[in-house]
Length: 569
Image 1: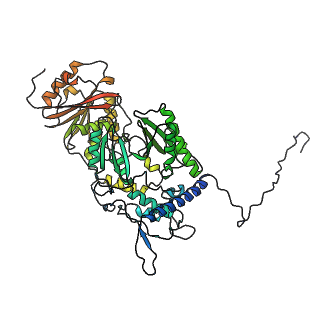
Image 2: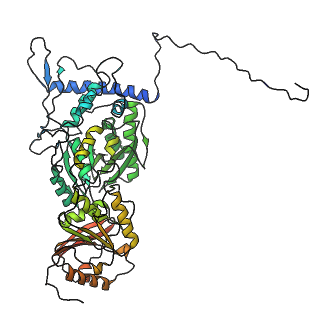
Image 3: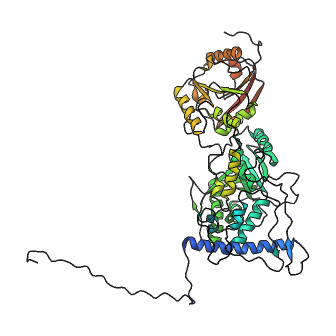
């Protein structure tokens, strides 16, 4: 190395003393942190809950005489009887949810979800169903996921708890007994449910729920109450076209002050449905409530939920107001607070196919409600002369083909604890097997805006409809021609947001077209213009109050009779 070369620096590694680990058999135990700590805590809670559940059940159980060499068997009478469901692949009536509870089969002293002992599952137990490796446990015992696997694709039969010894509870091994107990609760427990809907569709929603086979259906303001088991909750999400959400009531108590909301939230077993590994959103609404601030009420409800989960599991869920894993709704009346678990996630009117919207679009469940209120026969022709982005016609196509409205979208209950993805897939497979290949009558949409026609075609494609299922045409409603001797017109014509000013002459020209071309048809028009019958010079047979968002509208029904109108041209 020459004298001009700079001096080089060397890197020296210093050794550091390592503290010796305690021996495996020592007294010092390794502290667990993070997800594993939550799993261990949840398993401990599950064991304690199961012990209390079995202790409670033994007080009300009947013992069978023991036989020689066999232990004394204790059996608990089931709360409700269920008919046998068909096996996987066997066709059944898709309109009647499997495993539903009939009014004549429910006992008068049935427990609801508010009085049934809670069950717990560790995060590890719930994720086992999605794990590809399903080997034996290290102990060499049976696989812990075997009870859950046996349930998938099978019909819920009359539940019989696994025999338990009268002197002590069955041993808990890797959460196996917890899974069996929770499966029993899901198959027998009856939930009180509220399904909100657009104002004006309450009776139509009640008729839909009755047709689906649900019990104790009671229409009320902006929704319906009914009861069902957990599988009925899932079917309501899948099949209901008119409901906005499916809310399961998990707690109710008198509420006079904000601290009562905190106590109500702390008293509910949220750990049964979600935990610290989930994200949470809480919403609050009220009718005639004396509370001064709904925002503060919402905060107290959220604090009560998080405090309970932190005390039980050592951590609290994070808040996510955009895409939460779990949603909770608090409803306040003048003296009562009711808390609901939202099983839908996103609103049910979001079917997953409408990305292109018109100037004043209808929500999908409102469009389905208009078809229901109009009395449209799915085997009859349907025309929408102001089709816009095609919402009414696409909903009609799904109704006529028997496509469940929730078949292509995810739901909130899929992210909750204890969700059985295999059984849920069986339910959707059964629904898919009943979809018809083609329509019996034409569905035609007309609009004067070429961009609206293109948007309607793109929406129909995303709804998995072929090009010939719905005929979208660029044209004028005043030049429409009836595609069949009889049928229905169900439409949302331009009004309010879609018209700059009232055009009386337009309505008269369209009325002349209806009278001359559509004799024998039923015409159903939703509008916020209460003078529309006068503009059309037609007498409405029915006018149904209904809200389209914030607009107070009417659904007018006109029955066009041949040779009963003078020529207005």
